[in-house]
Amino acid sequence: MNASSAAVAAPASAAAPDFAAIKTRQKATWASGDYAVVGTTLQIVGETVCEAADLRAGQRVLDVAAGNGNATLAAARRWCEVTSTDYVSALLERGRERAAAERLHGIEFREADAEALPFDDASFDAVLSTFGCMFAPNPARVASELLRVCRPGGRIAMANWTPEGFIGQVFRTVGKHVPPPAGVSSPALWGTRDRMVELFGASASDITTATRQFVFRYRSPEHMLEVFRSYYGPILKAFAALEGGAQHALGEELVALMHRFDRGEGRGLVVPSDYLEIVITRR
Image (tube, rainbow, N blue to C red; front, side, top):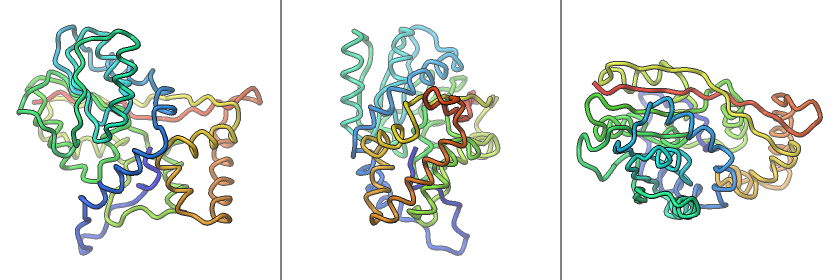
């Protein structure tokens, strides 16, 4: 959930974005706070993505932009040989800790950039990403890399937040207060079938999509905001970039957004957020 990335594509006449500089800033953002505090609440999505990919024991599986390892652990529980990658080493360490606690084996944790994966062509039977690849600044490059390392007939399975869902609206809200990098498209476009067909269609024999929901559950909107401000790097950095009055205004808008999506009926915060589940079969 990169709160600083709610942009639309730049006009063709604009200068090309400095992807290297953007990525350096993004890496620092994701390394701040402690994403695992939020990330572990999303574990169920890792499980459902592995089911959507129909993983089989013994398959070679790559988890890209793995964060603290939700899809990684889910694949390992299915007796796959898993390589877990992220460009933030601290997040990989959280994944190692979780794997050790569960006594899961067959996992290699490796620092890697989703836009330049250090693996040979057709190295994996399945490639996974849950709310990770969608935040890389160069979508075409990421898609090319996912396709390259997946074997023909293999599957790429992803979960990406939709533009209209709660997290998509969080992107939009934060983007009004902290402008995203010029020329970088919204990560929420990864949560649309049209974008998936645009990025993967030429190399896919099949693309299956379905809209799912993840439900955020916190004590209250104020509790959720406190957790995200303290531990979730993009929100932490967004608030840090603002002065006191502007911080208050952003906080109020986010709390109002949580109230609008809340289905808890006064018994704790219950916020459904749509995401697109995608399974791409490599041609």
